[in-house]
Amino acid sequence: MNLLINKIKVAVTFVAAIFFIGACAQNNSKTNVMEAPNEIPANTSHSNIDTATLGAGCFWCVEAVFQRLEGVLSIESGYSGGFIKNPAYREVCNGTTGHAEVCRLTFDKTKISFDEILEVFWKTHDPTTPNQQGNDIGTQYRSVVFYHNEEQKALAEKYKEEINKSGAYDKPVITEISPLINYYKAEAYHQNYFNQNGKEGYCQYVIQPKVEKFEKIFKNKLKK
Image (cartoon, rainbow, N blue to C red; front, top):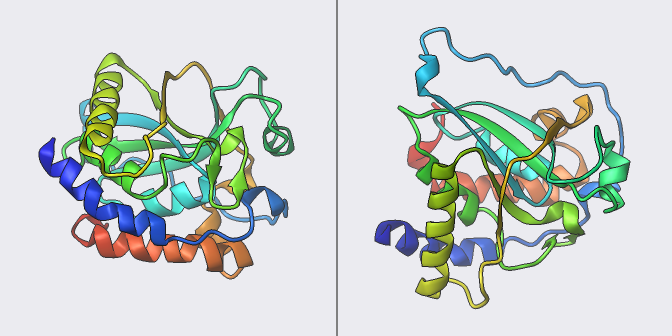
């Protein structure tokens, strides 16, 4: 616990250094792209597989970061936490559905723990800004952990409390911690977005710097 908090203190400068320009919702192009592989390796025991659902701003950014993390078997962008069934991207962007942009991670517990996933989550976005990450503003961009079970809930609440007690941030961490009540996969063109659209402006000026800083901080936890 103390080690995690100390690491998060060091990472505050990393979060503060990221300058977001543009907005995820401003790019509505529906380029036909190939989806990222979501196949679990044949030698992975299903008893070792777990799932996490996290929101930390634009799901293109979250996806690009966690795709590179050792132990993450698959990742999918979607919408969660709202009251409309099968929401469309434009509806979510209007902020009228209650959904957050999230990524659903499938991971191998023998290679990465939920604790470590929380560490990456809290280090790679600003959890002190309500409904905002940089210029991406709206309830759909809120910082949130949608827990799948009581163990995930307890860990998320414990770490959030410890981070706030540590004074790692100048402002309180306001990350929402809520039960997963629904999840809807986002449109196909959102999947594997950064890898397929890396030359676009948002990818170049927002996602790329975020990924590069993530790779420097977590170089020992990157996929080979």
